[in-house]
Length: 122
Image 1: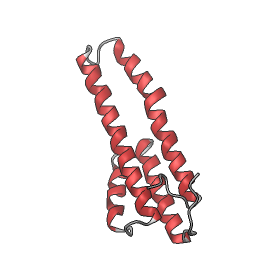
Image 2: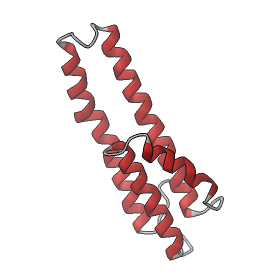
Image 3: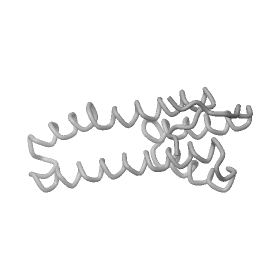
Image 4: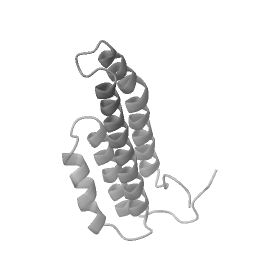
């Protein structure tokens, strides 16, 4: 386990927690709007700070979730369209397996932010 040598300031922990929360909101209740809020945070964080590392992770995570959703949508269209019986198989499988994994990772990032830890070590 990688322990950080320095203690993060309360301001950095608060910013990182806010970024992680916007990431969770983008994956759950406010898609799109929350992603715009994440992008607006890019100019407000200091490079190589705790919040910058959480922001980079949050943007990558949400872009991966969007790519997965687009992939599943294209797959549904190619395999019979939205009127096919397989549509619900893809939708339920995506939300139960894939989307849930993205949400759990975002919650894990929020817990790491609360603890003042980076999401991934360099």
